[in-house]
Amino acid sequence: MTPAEIAAKDRLIVALDLPSLDAAEAMIARLGDSVTFYKIGYQLAYAGGLPLIGKLADKGKKVFADLKLHDIGNTVMRGVESVAKLGASFLTVHAYPQTMKGAVEGRGHASLKILAVTVLTSYNDDDLHAAGYRLGVSELVEARAQQAQVLGVDGLVCSPEEVGALRKLVGHQMNLVTPGIRPAGAASGDQKRIMTPGRAIAAGADYLVVGRPVVEAADPKAVAEAIQAEIAQALGS
Ligand SMILES: O=C(O)c1cc(=O)[nH]c(=O)n1[C@@H]1O[C@H](COP(=O)(O)O)[C@@H](O)[C@H]1O
Image (cartoon, rainbow, N blue to C red):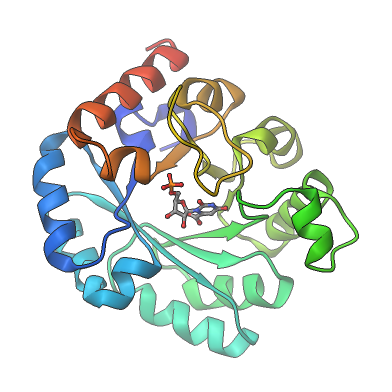
């Protein structure tokens, strides 16, 4: 399926940033048929959440294993070989050349797609400089995107602010996955590079990752469905 063929509903990835398997399963039950794609990140993975990947896949849901791997190349390669057996559709690694090379080797011919995290959406130029980088956000995102493409990475995690430039740079072969999504009026929290769902899709994002605005809502299903409606409207579908 090319990115252009992905249905509006399937472009929303809900981040199950929750403290336990019980809490995650309760959230999945509340979201019901509305949500088709879930992300499992640090909080849930380290609280025993990894088996949920296979369980969700068995129920026909897609899963994004957001493990943000980063280590020496061989360790990343072996780690990805293990993750490739869990049933996830996406796995994140940090966008460092050795890490991305190891991840692509570890993925081999598995259906798992490797996503390189370019620059975290909670960072701005000042944060990058404080971390010792010379480049600003847009320059570093673009440099890492080009390296990722050359190394055979399947997709990029970036903020919606960079999607337009990245699409021109990498074309339509790579999936562009954007966190930093905030429905109008929602609190930004620690995110610094944000956009509404409709604007992110209009900019060219393939998938939107949304955590707190959904999982902390009084009615998570209503919020998820409103985001999907906004996505559909932006797609003109
Ligand atoms: O890799 C990610 O998913 C990710 C990358 C990034 O640059 N920024 C970012 O926020 N994320 C994840 O996306 C989710 C965003 O959550 P909310 O800010 O609550 O919507 C969290 O689970 C983050 O770990």
